[in-house]
Amino acid sequence: MQLFVEFYHTTGFGQFALGNLMMIVIGLFFIALAIIKDYEPLLLLPIGFGMIVGNIPYIDTMSLGVYDEGSVLSYIYWGVKQGVFPPLIFLGIGAMTDFSTMLSNPKLVLLGAAAQMGIFLTLLGALYIGFSGEEAAAIGIIGGADGPTAIFLSAALAPHLLGSIAIAAYSYMALVPVIQPPIMRLLTTRKERGIRMPQPRTVSRREKIIFPIVAFLIAAFIAPGSLPLLGMLFLGNLLKESTVTERLANSARNALIDIVTILLGFSVGASTQAGTFLTPDSLLIFGLGATAFAVATASGLLSAKFMNLFLKQKINPLVGAAGVSAVPDSARVVHMVGLEEDPDNHLLMHAMAPNVAGVIGSAIAAGVLWSVFL
Image: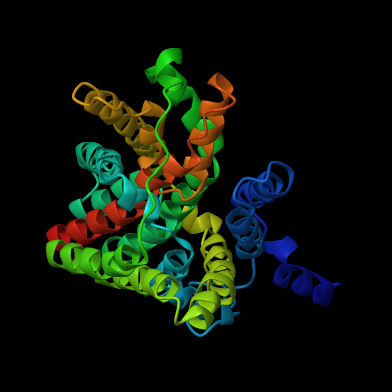
C-alpha cells in the first residue's frame, strides 16, 4: 500500500490542481474552435493541444516542461524565447504575399498605418494601469493582430509575459470573424458599405522586384529594431517575385512555415502552465488585447471615412478594417461583410492592400517600441 501511495503521488493525478483543469478546458476549447468553427486551425489546434500537454502535472524532480532547463520542450520553446521562430514565419509570409494590390493603390497604405493606433493607445492604457514601459510596449503590440510580431517583441522586452501575450494575440487573430463585423457595421452606413472601388491596375514585374528592396531599406533605417522581421519578410517576397528562386520560395511558403508554425504553436501552448499563466496580469492582458484589437479596427474604418472627405474616387470604409495585419482573415471578413450589402461588390483584392501594409506597419511599430523601451 505504501508503494502504491508513493506511485500515486508521482502520477499526474496526484499533482493535479484546479488551475490545471481550467487550462486543459481552455485548450480543448481552442481545439474545438479550430475543428468545428475553422477559426485559424493551423494556429489554434497546436496551441490548444500544447495547453493540454503543458498542464499535465509532474513531480519537481522530473524536467519535462518548457521552463525546465534541459527538457525536450525547453529546447523547442527556445525558438520562441530567443525570437527565432517569428522571423522564419515572416520569411514564409513574404514568400506567400502579393504586394501588387498595395502597389496599385498606394494611398491604401495609410489605412494599414492608421490601424496601428490600436498599438499605441493600448500602450498608454497599460502604462496607466501600472505596467512598466517594457511590459506596456509588449502588450500594446497585440493591437497589431500579428502573433509572430507580438512574440518577437515580448520575448525581447517582457519574456515573463510571453505566454499570456502570445495566447491573447493568437486568440484575437482567430476571432477576427467574430470581433470585427459588429464594429464594421456600427461605424459605417449601408451606403458606405456598398461603395464600389475600381479594379486595381496591373503592376509590372519590375515594380514587384524593386519594392521589397526599397521598402526594406526605408523601413530598416526608420526602425532598425524591425530588421529581423522585415528582413525575412522582404527576402521571402523577393524570392517569390524574382521568379528565379521558385524552389526556395516554395520551400519557405510550404515546408518551412508549416514546420515552424507547428513548433511555435505547440510550445507557446505548452508555456501556459497554470502556475505561471493564471494570474491577474494575464486577465488584464486579455482585456487590453481586446481593446487594442477593437481600437485598431475602428481606426482603420474611421481613417477611410476621413480620407473620403478629400477623395473623388471614394474608398469603401470596410477596407480600412483590414489594416490590422491578420492576413488574410481580416481581408476575407471585409469581403464577406461587403457581399452582404451587395453580392456583386468584391472587396477582397482591395482589402489585401491595407492588410499587407498592416503587416509591415506592425513590424515597424515593434521596432520603434523596442528601440524606445529597451
